[in-house]
Image (cartoon, rainbow, N blue to C red; front, side, top):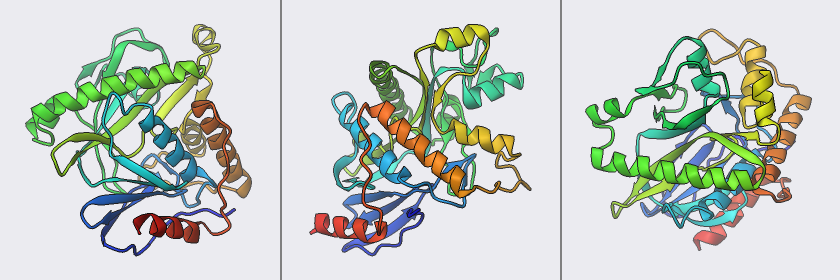
Amino acid sequence: MNTITDTNFKFPGQKSLYKGKVRAVYNINDNELVMVATDRLSAFDVVMPKGIPYKGQILNQIATKMMDATKDIVPNWLTATPDPNVAVGHLCEPFKVEMVIRGYMSGHAAREYKAGKRMLCGVVMPEGMKENDKFPNPIITPATKAEMGDHDEDISREDILIRGIVSEEDYVVLEDYTRKLFQRGTEIAASRGLILVDTKYEFGKTKEGKIVLIDEIHTPDSSRYFYADGYQERQEKGEAQKQLSKEFVRQWLIANDFQGLEGQTVPFMSDEYIQSVSDRYIELYENITGETFVKADVSNIQERIEANVLAYLK
């Protein structure tokens, strides 16, 4: 099972290399970024010990398609995709917050709600809601962007402004773009028989000072989807929703006594389990894009990526 879990390329004009939980970002001549999506799997802000076959390709290709489908409403950083696992775009200074937007009370919001909290990131959650109920209106619940190994933390709009993490002028734009993207994502999902439940967007500023969408968008790692068919019936019966997201991995980890807390050990992942996760990601790709997934050649992923990026940079 050939996977790519780390990269240490040396590209012409390379100024720096930043490694996130899943992506490696190469700065080329302080002008453009080469972003390599690896097959690393992160859950509860912890990177799992084994890679997931084709996961990087899946994330990169979904993000590319979704950036293309939203560029008319929100500008983005992307300029090229020279390899199935690689995106190239404008050098940006990232904002230190993730813009999380939730249309439904699921995942982290539901866990907080069950714990008795009715306020998330300074936003009130109505009384009397059940897990996976739709919010009256989508709510924006930002998180601070953690370094690798640290946990992202919930933060309110007020705290972002008070701490000067983002200026008010810029934050207004981030909120506007977040709502527009979520609306478009909701429409795209509906056309595929899906519900876009919640998602996160990341933004940066170009050297010219323009705010653009960066990183990934509407992927199963950054978003949660439900199947629309049967959603209402399942809610009425109090049944779990059929999900298309990374939540199935989180639930497996929770069932195996792991939530990224101190002293906990990542449970053993057998080859069979790894393969089942890969199969689920392919299913996610095909449902989200409405296209058949074409597996790239993985006989030597490192060599393939390096050759394609070098050809592009020439």
